[in-house]
Length: 271
Picture (cartoon, rainbow, N blue to C red):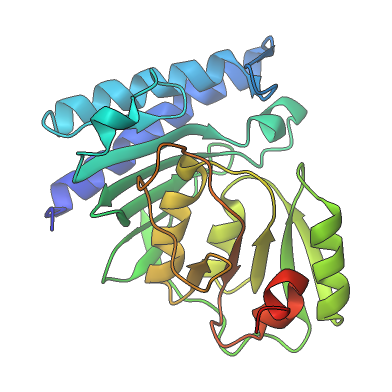
């Protein structure tokens, strides 16, 4: 396993903070919105944050490749041979950035043997930083103070369920109806993983497309805090195993003993 020394750990947090500063400069002065081929939004802040992170990680670990949402496409024929690499979303939640609601993040993860082994998520507006390493604890940093975070287990009697603010769909509504006693919390970007890791939310179901850079850092933090991120077959999420970078459906849980299979009709029918 790649050794994440304390110096590297802190250096990555510093890079995320520098990227956050670049994002806020755009956020505060106003910006134009372009659209990619898949119709998702793109701003100057996405590109500025990408440049900061790409340059910073290259200086820090020149031997490790980088896969970023805003970077050049890396063919499967190349990346399928990567045992270890950085997986980055320079600005997760661009739709929330455009809406100016503050619910966007910087996501940086280190992937090794298809698993996220180190993750940093930073919320530029609040300055909060969630960070974790595989096999160790997860922390929330506010200012310069780290606080240990753990999922809520057992889950609350009335489940607090995170729902995407910009990607709510009928399957999510059907799942919420099957849960029954639940409180829905609308939230953008990878903050949903962070709030489960803190014990403030219980469940985050996602149906429909996300990309691997959307989930990797959040998965590392959630798992280090005692939670799980599961595919419909119940297996933990893994990365860089296919040509596509699109994720399938998933269920993020603070308490892994929750009866999540019974909430998803397609899964329950297979039991």
